[in-house]
Amino acid sequence: SGLLFDDIPYLKVAQEEHDKFAQVLRDEGVEVVYLEKLAAEAIADKAVREQFIDDILAESQKTVLGHEKEIKTLFETLSDQELIDKIMSGVRKEEIQLETNHLVEYMDDRYPFYLDPMPNLYFTRDPQASIGRG
Image (cartoon, rainbow, N blue to C red; front, side):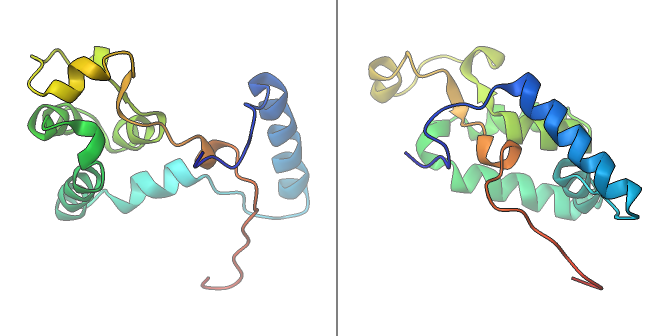
């Protein structure tokens, strides 16, 4: 498996622990930043956003199954923050009404995603710190 965990962490407790830890850091004067907000800021420029979408679709060829146009259309309707959230949480097949065009879709119909979620972004195992200009 490509995941960092063998089991899914209990979300409610993980969120509570994160919030407490982030507050301890803030109380010590540390700036706590969130990946989803930084990523949304990074794609605020239209050209950067378009390249980002194209790169995501190119890297996801084996799961988008020839439906790049429809998925790109979905992405283009979203705000920068919504786009980042959607890419992190994945694109479920039920979100996009499509005709089945590939034999592999019939064979793998039970798999619910065109783009897989990125749980390793939510529950990172290895913390990161940046000092100065990083």
